[in-house]
Length: 279
Image 1 (cartoon, one colour):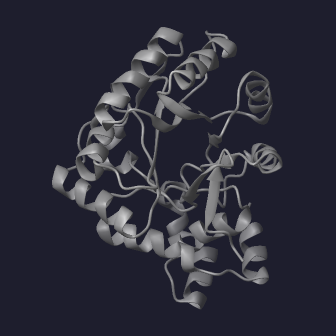
Image 2 (cartoon, helix red, strand yellow):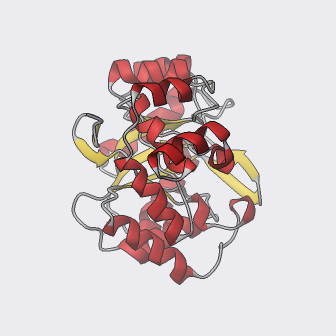
């Protein structure tokens, strides 16, 4: 059986197939993608379909994605987990600037709380480690926010296995978020470490930024199962490890339905062998 539920930090259950909000913003993750009502419809449909993990960030837009989450889903239904990120400042499309000073992390978190209309953020993820600020200071700021009740759990984005080990010496880490998919498995050592310690791994670009929907092997296996190629790529993640919790994003209702249908796809040993060979 493929587990449907993962318990963040061993106590916060979420369905493993969630929804990410980056695609609700425009090119370069800057500005709106289209009409707000369309984004609101997608978010509401995701929750109607049983999604319990919404993954967003303060710099998607910037601010736009968090505001859309609140507009669509507040007051939040019981059991819905909102994850967001801080630690990156945006100055334009595809322009990202790491900012890990404690006072800036606090200001970012408190701004996210206001936009999301929350008293506590379930999962607050450090979007990037700032190489110019000691890790202890960055995680210390998040730990202080946790003690104040403003965040519940801490996550990391784009880290190595060695950095996760170092972070775990400083505080409890509930999740990591690295690029990982069928054809990009550079973070395999990190995945193994997450498995060993029960840490959620939220893979970004789970569909290879769309490239895996055109992969020949995915297409062949999809045809055999009567599903779409992208569903095979997402199903592979769900089969690959019980700690993998993909949060594919889309601004399309039809694509949302397709993505969420991946949870029902069952891959056999031969399917997995063919897909594993893609690495």
